[in-house]
Length: 443
Image (tube, rainbow, N blue to C red; front, side, top):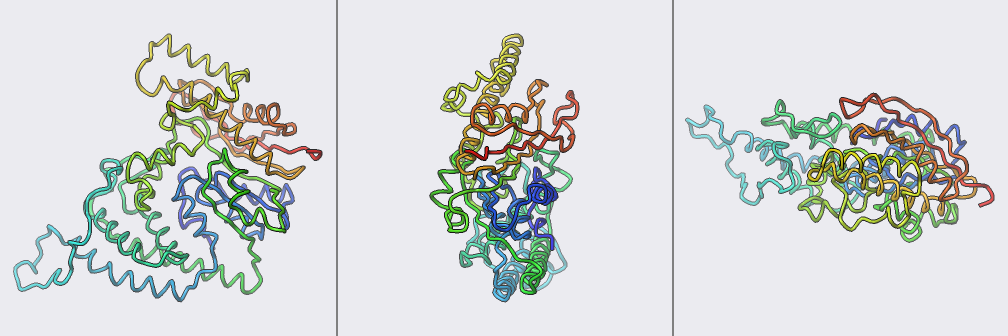
C-alpha cells in the first residue's frame, strides 16, 4: 500500500518524518494535525493511515487534487473499473491513429481502413500557451489533449479525480520531456512519441491495486483511518480560511482548535513551484495564461524572484528589518547591488525576496498561533539558503526568532535533519532543519 507514489513532487519530503514526529509528540487519534503547505499530501495521507484527523491546505490546484484523491478511500471500485474500461476503449484507437500520422506503412499501399471512423476534428491540438518550449513532443501533446477531453466528459466526482490525478502524474517525466535537477528543465533525450496509453493504463492499475489493499485493510479493522480535509488556502490566511471553510476544525470533536502542525514550507531560493508543476497545472486548466499563474503565485509566501510583485509590502507592514539578522542579510545584498552596479535582471529583487519571505512567514506564524491549542506544537522542515550571491540565510534560526519574539511561541528548538546539495556550484552543502515551535500552556 504505497498511495504516496500516485503522484510525487520534486520537493516532497519523506513520510518517515511524519511518523517519527507523531511518535515523539505522542499525537493521538483524538488530536487534529494540519499541514498548511500540504504539497502532494504526504502529511495528510500519513495521518490518515495512523487514524489521525488532519487538514491539508495548499495554493496549487494540482496539490489540492493530489491531497484529496490520495485520502479519499471510499471510492466505488466497480464504478472505477467500468469507467476505466470505457475510457481506455475510447482513447486507444485514437492514440494509435495519432501515432501512425506521418508514418508510411505497408497499409498505405493497399486498401487499408487504418483510421477509418476516427474523427480527430473535434479535438483542439494547439499547444497550451504556458507550455515551456520543448516540454511536450507533438504526438504526446495530441494524446494528452484527447485524454483530457474525454476525462472532462466524465462525472465530476471522486472516481474521475483519480483519472485526473493519473493524467497529471504521468505528464512531466513519463509523457513529457522534463527532468528535475532540482528545477524542471527540458530533456531532449526524451523527445519523440510516447506510449501514453500504456503509461496511463499502468498508472490506473497501480491506483486500483492500492485502493483494493487499503479498502481491505479498513474493512478488516487493520486500519482505522482518520478523517481528512484538503482545502485551497493561502498559508498567511490559514486561521481565517479554516474557521470559515473547515467542517473538521469546527466539529464538536476538535472545537475550533488544532493540536499539532507538521509541514515543509518554502524557503528563500529560486524554486518556482508553478514552473515545476507547470504541465500538471496546464492539464487541469489552472495555467491557461499569465493571469492564472499570477493568481497562484500571489497566494504563495514570497520565496523567489518570480513571485515578487510591485504591490508587495509585507516587509514594510511588519517592519521586518527591525530583526537584526534580516537587516544584515538585506544590507549585504543591497551593497552587492551597489558595488556590482546591478540594475537589470532578477538580482535586483534578491533583497525584496528576503524581506517579503520572512514577513510572510511571520503572518503565517500569527495565524498558526491563533489556531493552536495551548501547548500545541508546530514542526517546520526548512532549509538554509545560499542561493543569492552565496549570502548565507539561516532560515530556521531567523524563523525561530520571529516566532518567539514577535508572535509568542516558547523557546524554539532547531534540529539538523540533513545536509543537502546546494543549488549553486560555489556554495557548500546547506542544512535542512526541523524547527519546532510550542504555544505556551498559559496562552
